[in-house]
Image 1 (cartoon, rainbow, N blue to C red):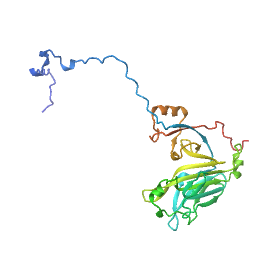
Image 2: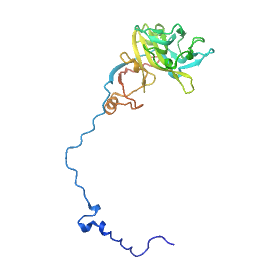
Image 3: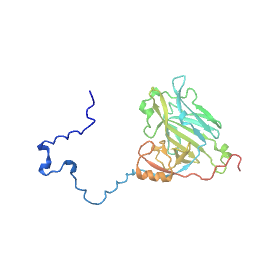
Image 4: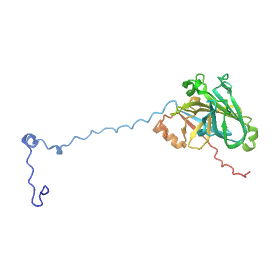
Length: 293
């Protein structure tokens, strides 16, 4: 047997189409010769409308502040006590000595003072620390919380009247650190508070998630924002809505931020709606090297 076809000669022409399919006898050109009329001239289509930006987005000016203490958020955890309770623990760096006070079911009153709303059951616990890096904090044994005594909704959500399931306040002895901060305005007091909720993990254990951070400097109250893209800096805004604090934001230059505003209303990293624009100004002066006067 051979291949279909022939090496020599010419193939016979195909047979003509049946009469009922041959339009040439009726004055109709073959379909492949048909031309459609051109699109009528007219004005060009308008460009698509710009992406609407949410009305609630505000442009706010922020300032860079130094808390005097660095709480390493990825070390924030609960540890088991011998009596089955949970103890708050974390790693931190401190520029000066001070103290850490832990509150359960904490609330900030009108005078910016923290208090425990269930003080009859869970007393605040205060522990002092020294200056230094790489320090470890852990509540003293016997002062923890028995999570089984409370409903899960009370542990994992911010309660009515803005009661946080757990909070801790770090107070820094500013007077012993003034020499390190020469060139800045003298500070009489400085304290940092972190408010958190308990988070239930897949293994039924609980963890900690910070939802708000407050810094007090000489009686001025700042809400801290974690800025994504510029290291471990904290940026403070005195007018920010506290319910939104703790959310990460993206650090962009001014030109890129303006471009994003007119192109989309979503974050280029997490794709969530943009809720606020913070304008941050940094001192352009070079930092003095160690030993410089």
